[in-house]
Length: 304
Image (spheres, rainbow, N blue to C red):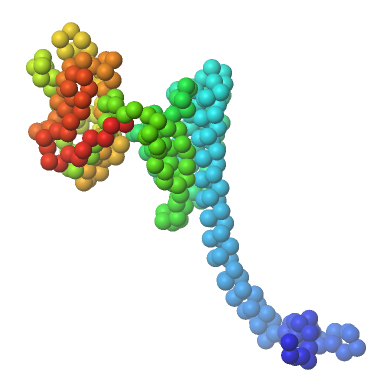
């Protein structure tokens, strides 16, 4: 390196106004030197501080994501271990999440383990099969109400992180496709997409052709306040036997809805046609064989 004729320490001393003779300072700051030093400090701070704040916010987001994943896995492990002969789950609020004991969440329970979020973050979505909580199955660790949790920065919603919970109990911060090879699919749970705005739909009709029985359900009565979720379950008496069915949405927007139908053959012995207003969505045979309805707006049913 070329010799500049002075050391960095000497340069700094000259910059802030210290003139040395025989190793002793003779003068203090001048106004100009002080202004230069302050300007350099302000410029350095303006360059460094935004980067530090970004790193701090991103670090908080990453840490919250890991904490949620850990809480979900803890609840799953406690359930599989049958601690206290109970299931465990996680309940999500906008500003916190809670690991709870049992199949239902009670805010005042002494068993609750509450995890507040960093104030710079919010849980903007907890889409867990129409709920904002999840409880794991005691025998398998599976997640009956699977879905996703989304956390984001309050000041910038584009900075976010999504945690996925899959039906087979896998918890991940990245997209994952569960393997279906070890499991035989059946018609107990069927999903399909209806490419139509259903927020103003009127009647969900269950028609049992063999017995000529019709059950009309007021669709609006089972929508949430924001018309983003539909959830109905009930039993219909057909030929002296109750047919137990649950129909809900996994998503519901202005353009389409993803429906999920639960029809267990242990409780259903009749053929069934499902309509929404005048559109035939889905059909079942008495043995559970599932076929797409006649509506051109309906996608192929997917057996779960």
